[in-house]
Length: 277
Length: 277
Image (cartoon, rainbow over all chains, first blue to last red; front, side, top):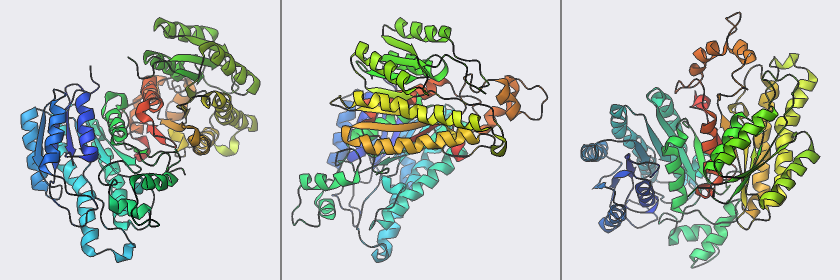
């Protein structure tokens, strides 16, 4: 018996990284999945674009668990695309219980005053307004269900504290906290809970790439993953360089489950103690 | 299979209310329990003292789940008694993995300027130093574990915001946040995680008593708990009059489990949104 038997969860950025991990963990707990991903290059992104092959791997992993998944190509920068994907998914799977606003990018790093207008605006468009579009498309279905629900947004430690040279990312992830709190208040009477999760660095393509390794190890010409982990440990209180995607998924499963039925408006770090360090 | 199979948990204030609920939930997940309780009157407490009969009932419920429990009479104000209870429990059960600093009091509310010195100081002695003594007694045992451990402190929504007439309680519950953050830093290298939970109003004798009813219904001459409950739902946006002890136990089980293996230094409200209201 799973902790989310019979539930349906909507996940943005589902093709790989944390999104895929969430799809698999929720499926393991008995949920069906509605997922979207942009499957296209994002200007300035530090990681390679997600592909149809990535998406198919997520689909195969969920179906191997005997759960259903409706996976669509859609961009969180388009309310129309997000809305259509959610509406189609709910039409096929019959209900919606949980929303995971996971899609996000990491782009150019450098002094905040040196950011291009495009880099700043695109970041907000994806990492903050994209979360709002995800919620706007999904909330009518949660309300229609009349069973309450759970919305979980992936913020970051950068949503609760500053990181130098990531001004656009820090702004977007702080913005997510404000959006979460506003929605938590608005939706509480419907028993729809809204919370944010604040990961430290996670072992996903957003971090596990050469550009990020060089950011952490400017002292080395060709830093390896081990060089990165050694430097990243400095951020965390626990003696680890990064957490795994499943650690974020596990926190989400708990927040989505009835065990957290009165947890709302909460910012939950999963950060190996980086915020207290 | 439980999420805490083979673990041993130490719980202060185990005789009834949240402490008993934690003992039962942790036992359901496969843990054995070391528990202690003061079983004595606390000056100024509006609730009847915990009794040996209360303790016996906790023992009965844990044993009914086929788990072991070592339950002792000990006062968190007495370092020697706490240390003896913990050391004796570990000697009998073989190990220690989780510490729950749960014991606490809420005594004679009044404006801060009218509060008696011993009422204020007793609250700090029990709610802050008592948690420190509990942690201090547990830490040497936790350090022996290869995989570290988890210390969980029960703070309150009053640990993150002010509340009129509660100066002693608010000060004590804020203080344990500082204690938690410091312990999280000191113990991270040993993989011992330290977090606080922040309950809203819980259905226990600390809340359902005449003193609380009078405090929250100054409009009535002889208010009852039902009169209090009639307005209690307005204290949070979800409209929940009282949360149940198991809502806190469920949060503690999650934080104690491997699902939260990289969560440390975190303040987790379980408050139906009270803090964002």
